[in-house]
Amino acid sequence: AQSVTQLDSQVPVFEEAPVELRCNYSSSVSVYLFWYVQYPNQGLQLLLKYLSGSTLVESINGFEAEFNKSQTSFHLRKPSVHISDTAEYFCAVSDPWETSGSRLTFGEGTQLTVNP
Amino acid sequence: DAGVTQSPTHLIKTRGQQVTLRCSPKSGHDTVSWYQQALGQGPQFIFQYYEEEERQRGNFPDRFSGHQFPNYSSELNVNALLLGDSALYLCASSLGGEETQYFGPGTRLLVL
Image 1 (cartoon, chains in turn purple, blue):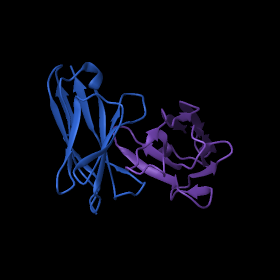
Image 2: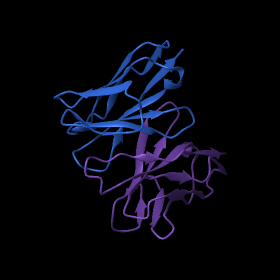
Image 3: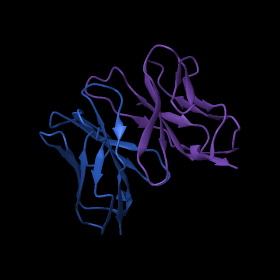
Image 4: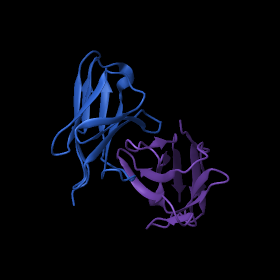
C-alpha cells in the first residue's frame, strides 16, 4: 500500500518569505501526485498535480512543486508567501495502474501559518 | 459550472444512531468518492462509486455503506454510530477513469 509522509506538521513563516513544504511518498513505481489546500472549515481545493511530462508543475497563485523520482519526493515551494496563504496543505498520491478506479492516499497535512 | 455540493453541512447524532450524507458531483462527472477526515488528520478513503456500483473500498467496516443514483449523485450511510465516527466527511467527484478528484465542502458529523 502506498503511503505519504509530510515531514513538517507546522511551518510558520513571515510574509514575503520563501517556503517549502516537504512531501515524500513510498511507491517506487509510477505515481500521480497532488497538492491540495484546505482553508479553515472548508473542503479541499486542488492546488497542482503531476501526472506525467515536465517534473516541475505550477499553480496559478505562485506555488510550484517538483517531482523527484529518485528521491520519491514532491515538495511544494513558493518564493514569496502572503497572509492569505495561511492554510493546511495536503500531499496526496494515486496509482495510475489501478484499473478499478483511483483512490487518493493523503499525508497528515502541513499547517502553513504566514505571520505579518 | 456547479461544483461538488454536499448536504447537510453539519450534523449532530448520538451513539447507535444512523446517518445519511448526500453528495452531488461536479457537472459532467460520473464518479464519486467518499473520504473521512478526522480532526488534525489527512482524509482517509472510504469507497468509490461508478455506474451505480462500489468500485473500490478502503479499510472501513461494513457499517459504512453507500449508494449512487442514476444521476450520479451519491449517499453515504453510517449505521450504529460510534464516538470515533465524528469527523468531516468529504465527497469528491471525477470523470470516469480520470485521476483528478474535485472535493466538496464536506459534512461535519459530531457523534455524542
